[in-house]
Image 1 (cartoon, rainbow, N blue to C red):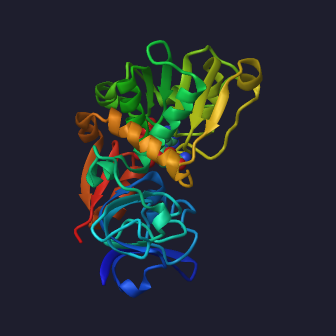
Image 2: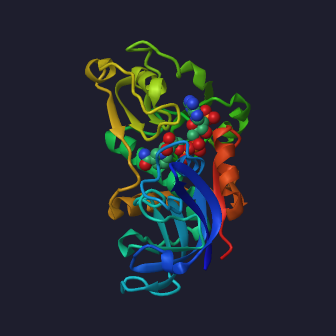
Length: 327
Ligand SMILES: NC(=O)c1ccc[n+]([C@@H]2O[C@H](COP(=O)([O-])OP(=O)(O)OC[C@H]3O[C@@H](n4cnc5c(N)ncnc54)[C@H](OP(=O)(O)O)[C@@H]3O)[C@@H](O)[C@H]2O)c1
């Protein structure tokens, strides 16, 4: 038996509980992993609270991220005792995920941590840190340059936002942070933002084109915010869209794209091929500042997962929550 959160649907109603689960119920997979760390991402909070249609099959163990040690593997690439981690690949959506003491996984999903990062570091960063780096790679490939270019980061007090700021600051960009929590301005400046703006400036319907304010942006908010972010991106600039905390809609016009040559990049972390994942994690390992990692992250036990999910939607979670699994 092992302990894990289970989301189920009974008579059309979603249930969620921390349960003792028989190992025989684990899904098929080449590798059995004892989980040491997991996290609560926005998507996990949607799944746990039932606020969003994240879970595709019931019963489901939530948790899009996990890190731990291999107990057994039929794939020779992994030996018992190997430290491994997984981000995405449908964990917590179509395959049992990380908010539990055990997982059974496809070997193709497992990565070994870069030398400079522990499993705990990797889960503190989690999908949020890895997605922030994917967004930065898209802006770099577009040609944005530190020193000269200003980048806007929306949803700044969240996980993707916090790591985007920390990494962009380490690279030498000037950063504008947009937040609904102006009381967190000191925290955002400590991460590396030079300016902090109220998200209300961006969250209502705006004009097709605004003043050119930034060369690029990392947006985890969507909705009117993303439309306004594009409208105020400078000529030939780029926006990396990775989230929907305000909404799934995109009520924009084509004006920024056809009159200013702005490029909108879509960022997906879930099904990214492993070579790009490794590149992103190596860049993170090079750039990571441990003081910033500690500033962004809070640790909670597995039993708190549902409470953390509720706190996240109440705007009470700053940065990232790392979940310690005591297997
Ligand atoms: N594409 C991918 O592969 C990928 C990967 C990871 C995450 N995501 C998505 O990215 C988003 C952020 O994820 P996360 O883990 O960083 O979540 P998070 O920690 O909850 O951060 C989201 C932030 O968005 C802001 N926000 C919340 N509600 C808002 C609203 N109604 N209007 C405007 N801003 C709002 C808040 O920041 P302030 O308080 O500072 O305003 C909040 O901290 C989510 O939508 C998530 O699903 C996508």
